[in-house]
Picture (cartoon, rainbow, N blue to C red):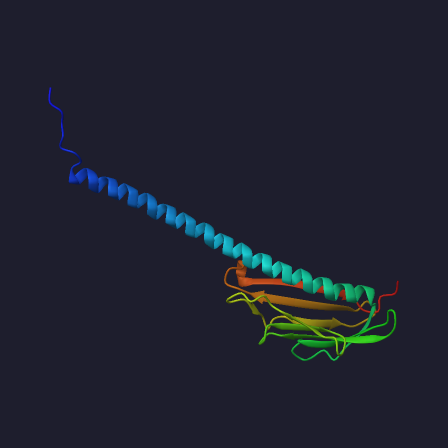
Length: 168
C-alpha cells in the first residue's frame, strides 16, 4: 500500500484562497455597516442632548417667569424680545442665527450662546423661527430645525410653545 504524498494542488489552494477572500470581504462590509449605524446613532444622541438642554432652559424660563409679552419679532422670525413678570419685571432676548449655527438666549448681560453640536454637515436651518400669535389666548411658538443628511427627511425639528399672559 502506497501513500499519496502529492500535497495540495494549485487548484485546491486557489479554491481555499477564494473562499477565505469572500468571507473576509463580507465581514468587512458587515463591520462597515455597523460602524455607519453607530455614527448615525451618535449624531442623533448629540442632537437630542442639545435640544433637551435648550428646551429645558427656555421652557423653564417661560413657565416660571410668567411670559407676559412678546415684542420686536424680526421680519425673518429669527429674533424677539420676551417680557416676564415673575418675580419682578424683566426682559430676555432670543436670537436664532442660522449662518453661525448659534441660538442666543438670556437677559441683557447674561446671554448664553447655544452652539449646535460640532458635527460635520449639521446645520441650523433658516426655517427655524420665532412666532407670536397675539390675542386673548396668545402664544409663543419657537421652532428649531436642524438639517443633516443622516436624519429621516434630512431634518430634525423641535418646538417650544408657551402661552402669553396666561392668568393662573
